[in-house]
Length: 211
Length: 210
Image (tube, rainbow over all chains, first blue to last red):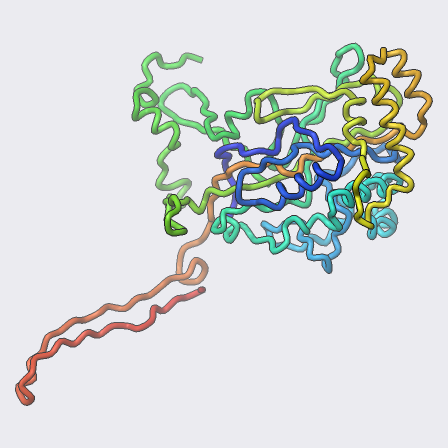
């Protein structure tokens, strides 16, 4: 089963920041566990990590949780049902594979300095590994029957522009992955209403592809 | 580009319905298309289309530390408002503050992080109390612990998605269900003086590639 077109936004891509305290973490966790109703939790989890020496860019996508061991039951890409053997180089925040990863993939950024702090964030959420949110995760067809969403374990780069103190744009990252590049006006596409006024009688709908 | 002034296909009530429904394609490049329909899945609930489902995806934004970050702002997209919004580096830093108060979870060990979060809190205090740019810079320079990478995660970007299932037809891959013919016949049993009805059927269907 392939997702080929958007048909409505239901939440999670707004401006609401998670406040890292006991009550808000509990609410966030509850919202993430509820996969039946439209998502109503915080939109952004903002973390600060101790900077490492390596300043090279991160891979895309990243696996952002701290364990991908098969024993923990985490499936990186449930939809495909595939075991990805070369996913370690995308695990910028792993703990247990860090030594192995850095040995094998010299180009992977050094985030070892930030791992303690990141683990502390996950601990505040009460998460040992991200797959807990999707325990008993189902493949596409079964999820459609049960009308429940899956919780992803990997994240693609999102669209972000950087402005300096003089309000001049100095850097831009174009989003990729499932959502693609974001810009003011693309909500209508994600609502399933994006229609190009093409000449003649031809009818064309915007379709943003999945990964 | 010269648009038609009168585009009958897209106008009127039927035209709007047609635009919402999308083009009605029965085949695409030789492939047959079978459109999905809504079905009642649970008694008392509205019918659902099984090829329309909620999907959550995640995005990340990584801001590696470098001198000057503290004067920058970062623009992200808000789909609920279909607009872009900005956050300063300081706002991102303050949003990463961890308040450990009330946590009894043994896995939360703030030992090494406490100092960082204390510094974040003190810097935020200056910011909230009308700290000028110079004052903020001076204060920031005092804290070497705050030269941090920022990682923003949006782990629950949720949309309804329309899906397709691609299958090759035939008994080998998509499979088939064979259901034999039935026969209903009346008969006259003159020897015993009765009339009867005989109904023959296949008790089970034959399913290939179940």
